[in-house]
Image 1 (spheres, rainbow, N blue to C red):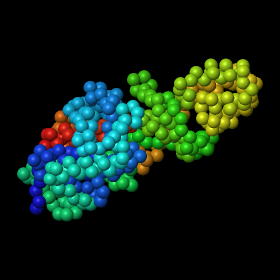
Image 2 (cartoon, rainbow, N blue to C red):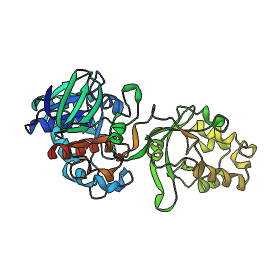
Image 3 (cartoon, helix red, strand yellow):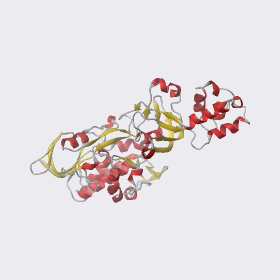
Image 4 (tube, rainbow, N blue to C red):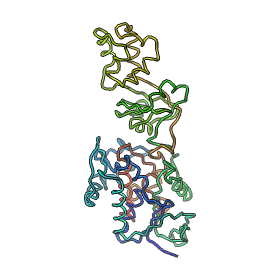
Length: 401
């Protein structure tokens, strides 16, 4: 029976990074994954260029950019391995990158550069990698070591790291393996649900807007009330079934089923004042005038919702103009659901952080068992935050191994 110091299940961002560091620290490391390809989520992220971190992360205030039942849990790992640390590694490997906006860093050429870097780090640590290789069963022997029944036979390891990710994008191999394993060893889960995901609306309600599919515009989007309120100024994308784009992906992680989202479709404009002023000097149709502040297709679709809005602006009543401005500035609607794990970029929920040490990511009641990355109940904003959690949690775990 082959024996290793560490077995890492999951050859994604967190798993490969943790394995490479642990190997370079002198440990015999085995990485297993049921998929024939490594790091598929890196490969497809950021339009194929991998938004690999975000300069704006403030590890002292993780609640600003991370969600979970205890967002402060990620402070320790994020403060010990920062975006600057990962950027230094990327630069050491000669990978060119650029900042797109809002601190988001992308590879210049391809996400493949990042995957090659992680594999090179594993190579430098002498990491053994088995792929594709399934894990049928995991148990702890009498000596405290973990025994894994795999597609290539049974192996043992003193430490076991679970880096299997969440449920999002099952078509590239996502499963609930990590969640099931946590439960097998008595760890609690925060119920998983799709995060960073498009929102959907029922067919009849959405019919007036379905023709706007493909239309994008900047919006102010919010949901929740009081301390639970979240808002973003980002781009919105209309789809055949509902809404997507960065604005909606961001708000989806905060949205609770049955509650509304609120949209200002002209966030930089006092529409009521602009329309009132235009009424005195313009002879255009109201929709044509409205197209100065929102896309023409949106202006046309909106004007068609009321006979009051289909005249020249000069002939439109003041109350009708005020109503139009209010609807566009405070459009409130209740999604019927989301596009689910199939289209979600991440999974909210996962292994309850109260079960883990924030310094080592080790299960408090199960020595030698660690959980890192997306399988844990830590979810970041869109824009490189989730990858930084993968690097930081992997680093914290590897240091402890």
